[in-house]
Length: 439
Ligand code: 5AD
Ligand code: SF4
Image (cartoon, rainbow, N blue to C red; front, side, top):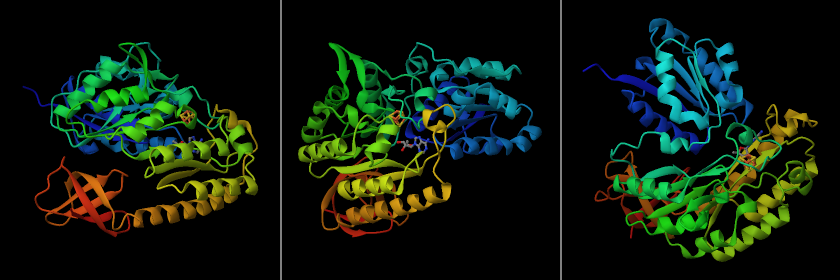
């Protein structure tokens, strides 16, 4: 038998790309590829790219430039670009970087085996269509290999919201939900292979409305179906939009024991004037009232969010409104970004904020967020949490896992194994993790 070919995938950006990369590796497994962690020994290099901010897209071109030497040394090496930069820039990538043999957009991964064959035959292969088929269904099934205790599972893709700053509706296309039965089959398979916690993924995951046995099912309906799977202990979902935070989903947070008390609910800004220009179709006040309702249903829920500072025409007073909102919500985690102009989006046409001013706002916002994050993490000391252990820690006999609230927890307990869930008392709060003792 011939040596298997080696595949090196580098993943940028969001968790959905992490999931897609796993699926692409499986699809190319059917073509005789095994994964490698080294670009030097690869026969095929795939960059799974992100287009959300300018810096993310530019990284791709500088990374591609670095493969020049590898390709000179190994003319058979094939180089591919997948993900949102592939979708947004298409043929332009091959023009700008002739090293690239293959370009595949996020909705065409099921065509990867054909594209690979074409590239192997010495042709340039490109596919950035939005076909009707379910790419995940067409991709070869996951091999029955053992898995770690946590997994991502994409249930919804694309976005119809058209926030004025965002490329996602253009790169991932319109909102599409996968049917319930396919998701449940995949979830059961993951559980059989050792998975204990599944994070449901979607750009607008709470807009999920997949075909079920009795018509369309909501995300809450899907969560209750997953709740019935024995051996699946924890359910999470991300990313949600405030406008799709329906009553049944809030109710699931109150009553579904497997649904973890953590919610990533981006608001982006705290000024109504800016929210309107962002085309968010909610106000700061409606968001705060929503958070109140969620906390009434699940008082210990840990909130997480995304923020953009320096959006076109943002004034100091607008920015202060963002700081006010952050003070009111107190996020356990939050991700903040300086606005990045994305070609083709409506906000790109608006008067831009001075970048030095935007940098300054970003630093001030991050200082407040970090303070809250710290206070919330420190407030866990003395509390009992449940930890799903994922891997051994650096010290002998130590295990590391995540609490319900997604805090990393280190525990010294030689008897524990990955995949186990244990009650733990938190005894210390360190830089980026908690220390605990088994109860
Ligand atoms: N500039 C800066 N941040 C952006 N995001 C999306 N588009 C942009 C942009 N053009 C941020 C949003 C979103 C997160 C995934 O990325 O906060 O929630
Ligand atoms: Fe982008 Fe807005 Fe859709 Fe989120 S909701 S993917 S920020 S357009």
